[in-house]
Image (cartoon, rainbow, N blue to C red; front, side):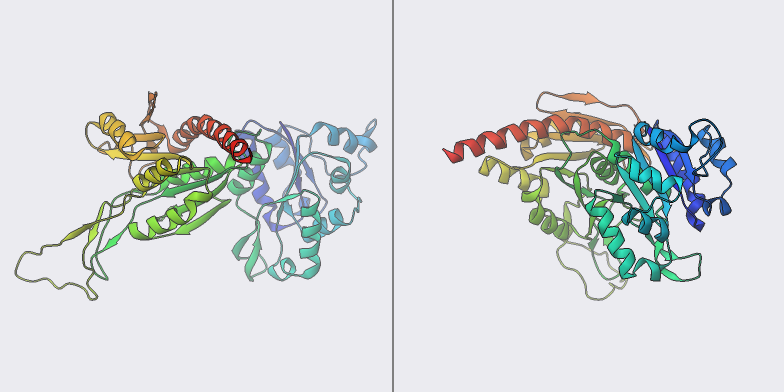
Length: 411
């Protein structure tokens, strides 16, 4: 698809170069439009080299029909992205001012529009700017949330241009065609749980959360409203997800059970501890001369409880579980799926050094009622795509059952 990338005058303009590259990696063609102020921060030649297209820098450039180029471009682009979007251009767009090529293009196009604001934190919180952004939102403009931190002016606060990955993800989501996940509510769990023995020590596992984060990110890209419940992990969670942080299996259980009824699908990718210490010491346990015996208590089985509740009620979300095994991987996954009454189990051999816990790649077997599909070693993001490809028909079938149940209840 053809994307018009508007670049306005701000220090964050350099990030627009990486945004263009990121969109190209997704197969999109880019035409850059730079305001006069933007050219003071980044040279047009940089964008020309990346996009392999002439960069538009003025409203009235020489050549036949140059004065109506914005009309021709408005009808041929699939999306208009402005990154960075300064307070000035946001104000002009909100009030219909078209005094340069970029703002004229905005008023002429009827394609989706995405803005990534960047400005001083005081400007960002000014009532006029906030009202201008609300005006554009009411007209259907999508915003990529600005970041917080050190600003070029020396201030600390909100107003930094979002990272290129977040901007690209938003654009990709807007352009993605509707799927069975579009508008659905998806609950994803990720990471380990830590079961405290005392204020210093805990029982845990090596899960990094990457697999669950990849599923959450892919579901959001497909248009789902995603809630991500994550155990302790140092990996940055994906953008555009509601993130709920937990530490223990009991906390994970409480958060999942409180939200599962509102979900259309639940993907339990977290490596939840099966046991916890029966007693948590208030103070650090000192080393003694004798061996130490720790008594463990069984943690609640969140996935099994969800499956049992759905079976009792006769309805509920699509359920996906994970089986981290070191032997008899597929056989144990089949038994787990039947015992826990879920739709799909993602089985992986965590004894492998290149798959499973704390690495970027995974090799899994998808086990369903009539499905046993082995996926080769690949990135966890690709595995997430394959998982959700199988979840989508399950969601479509669930939607049919929900509609049938509603028709029956109205009789």
